[in-house]
Length: 200
Image 1 (cartoon, rainbow, N blue to C red):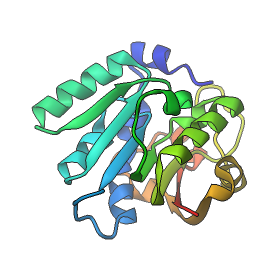
Image 2: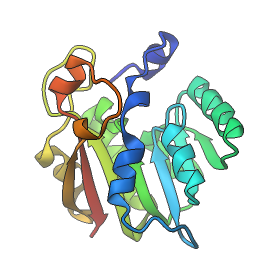
Image 3: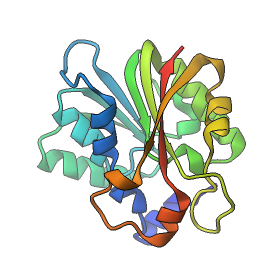
C-alpha cells in the first residue's frame, strides 16, 4: 500500500499534477449541470479536481483519509468560491461514511491503485454501491509493473476484474498527451491510463 500520509508530510504529491480536469472534460461530452449531476471524487487529495468539477456546476462530494490534504482542499475551495462536500474517511469503507448513493459521475485519479488487492476490492464495492444506474466511472492507473515508490498499477484485465460485471469498460485515455506539465521519466515510463467505465 502506498504511504500517502508519509508522502504528504514529505511534500511529495505528484498526483496534484495529473491532467484530471482535461480527462474529465473529454469524457463528459455534455457538461451542462443540472438536477442529478452529482460527482464523487475518490481520494481527492488537495481537492483540485473536485473544485474544478464544482465550478462547472456539479454537486461534488470528495473523500480522502488524509486530514492535512483536506485542510488544503478547503482553503483552495474558499479561495475559488467553490462548494464541495468534503468527507474525511477511508475509501475502502465508502459505505460507512454516510454518503448517499446516486452519483452519475465517479472518478479516481490514482488513489485505488495504491491500495492492497483487498483494499482495492473493498473500494470498488463501495463505488458500485454509490453509483447511479447510468453512472460513468473514470479510473486512473499506471501500467502493471513492479515499482519501489510508484504504485504497481493495473492493466485492462485488472481493472475489468476489479469492477466485475457491474461495470462495462467503454474507452481508455492515454494521460501523457493531455498533461500540461513536464512529466518526469518515472511517470512517463509508468504509462498512466484513464479507464472509462459505465454502470452495466
